Amino acid sequence: MKKYIDPTVQQLSLPMKMSRFFALLATVVVLAQIVFLANDIDGICYNDGCAVVDSLTTVAPIYFNIGGLIFFQTIFWGIWLARKERKRLRFVNTVLLAGLAAEGVLVAYQHFVAEIFCSYCLIVFSFVVLLNLLAGIRQIFVGSVVFASVLTGFAALQFGGVGASPLKNIDSGTYAVQRGTDQQGRYLFFSSTCRYCEEVIASLEGQQNCTVRFNPIDEISSFALEEAEKQESYKPSINRELLKYFEFDQVPVLLVVSSSGFEVITGGNLIQQHMDQYCTVSAGESFTPDAVEGLSSGRAETSFSDFLPPLDESCTIDTDCEEESETVPQN
Image (cartoon, rainbow, N blue to C red):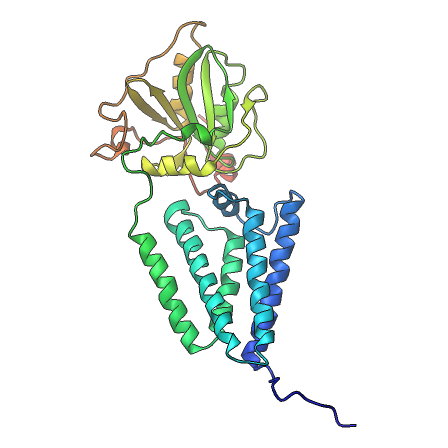
């Protein structure tokens, strides 16, 4: 008996078959990420960028992934339904352009604002780009224009509120607080991979005179000071943005805030000297910093770093300098 073949149903071309395959593969990757996040597992990520980017969003990462799952499934089934009517591919191509535009926003934000890339985000971005490439020459051209337009728009913008104090949201970046009798605002910016930061933090154990807020630039999994009060939530991105605002690319940095202004102390050695001088005084005494003139709010005309001594005992923000400790000569 001859098998009946519906003449309205066409065979999928090779690019369409490949598109369905990669859409299905992307679905599996995103679904795996959703399962990881739902079970409080770190998920698919190969650098610290994922945690930084996640901290920049107002929506939980799992919802972004659910959106990605819907996107890739729409492409998968859209191509399948296009067998009967190729005009349906227009809908698929439109969805692909929308996905490329959304990825353009995320990639641009990581580059221009966060200044660090999320490895998992780049994997998803690669799938979206590949699916657009498989959709044909016209799709490649239109997609390139859309993506370039998003990048150009971001490059032309300066992020941050006009006239807003750079210290406005600094408390939202605090991971832990060590309470002391002196309520002077002291913020220690540090990273989990900076050995000089670890030395400064360790030196503060048992100190009860100064109140110190600890503001990390990355996610913290462990902390040396058990007596410090952990905050319910914190955003490392705020601390990175603040250091960027003041044109610092190294930690540790101690920011001392007063009613008249603020001063900055950089380098492990100088920070420990400050703590020894002002945080080991008798209870009840306090320290009022000599604020840098003209810097009580906003940005000074001269680069803020011009007022500071050369950095010593510091680690570059995006470098793990923990491994170098064995090679540093001891005095």
